[in-house]
Image: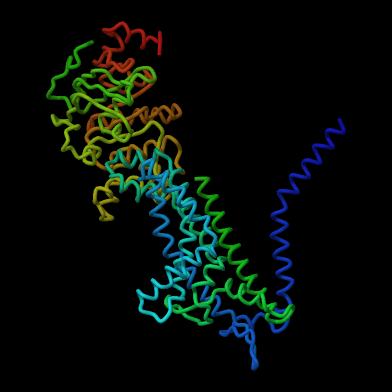
Length: 291
Length: 261
């Protein structure tokens, strides 16, 4: 008897341990990245980050203002989100409510495949197709700009939005639709006025998760956005995102230098942003499952 | 089979059903139904589960059209006009023939928006017109006094009985002529059921009501006419009083006295 109790306890500890690992890892990540970033907060101080210039290597004066990186990330993310929402939601509505069974069977694997493409490979596609296209359409000297980056990010985010939104739309009770149709609403009216609003919180959560992914995306963006440290809100200007900055500079930075610490600060800010977005998404999803 | 139009002058009929057959895929669910449903009366459809009464009810507003692989033969006319003719607009048919479902199904919207949904999709935009319709419909459904101070709160916060009356109000808001009710009180407690029954009694002066019910006491309480279905066949149709006291068919008698079903 004590033997079995002991075994039960051991298994329990193992399971709890496995389940808490993720919490531990997240905490450790915060801790160690924070540890590298803290000295920067002491000297030269966090105020340094608010500057308008990111000049980490200079013979005159270095400057670690992350504003151009933040605006770059914001610009690319916002554009990508604006492209993702209409496209992703419409596709989800079509797959969930309009498509016949065989259409769905063809569409879904392709969407899943799109989600599985490595971002570097998508970056190639960007360089070969998107960048020349953007260049030609807007008559620019170069197609390496925020718009090209956000198109690639939208391609990456759309599958997530489609899958989760589709789930949300399909879980809208049939009784809502019957009620609407029985009142003389057309199928289209029912779709836009009852089904989609009822699935809205799920759709919002889908978009949030996708935005979280978009903010953190690095490779594809680095390949096509032009990587110029401009503060701009024009889609056809080259920009540099926070992620691209870290990826590009981390390799050659002097260990423990101010530059090194500043990059960790950028990382912390990214981490916080995605963490907050994910939390909002989770909360919205939870609410919608209750309803 | 009792003559479907006994005691009924065809000119008082709102709905005339002739030779109606209905199939779900290969399975025939209704067999040669003929029935004249009187205007501004309550007609109850009774019978054991799976007898086709709900299927029949749903042929009257063509809700069965939404189920794949169903087929219908025969004719149903409302005010003399066939509702299955090729030129019939299903949307305007469903506007004329409202429906209340077994399980109350308010939209996850405010009380106001629930009732205003029908008028809105039929093109009414003006706020004060909508307010008027919402109030009138809620009063008619005996719910106004309970909800008038919280029209903006979510309909899902209402009790089961209130939700069902809200669904009735929502159906009334598009000004239907016929109201189909599919076991509207089967999920409610006795008190709420009594309220729904009172409501049906009040509505009969303005609407032609067809109600499916499992509950024979309910049928005898609320209806003027009763149709007894068994295995897809209309066994007997007549005045409720007569059907419950002196049924013509042995099967009807067996059912209402509880020998089967």
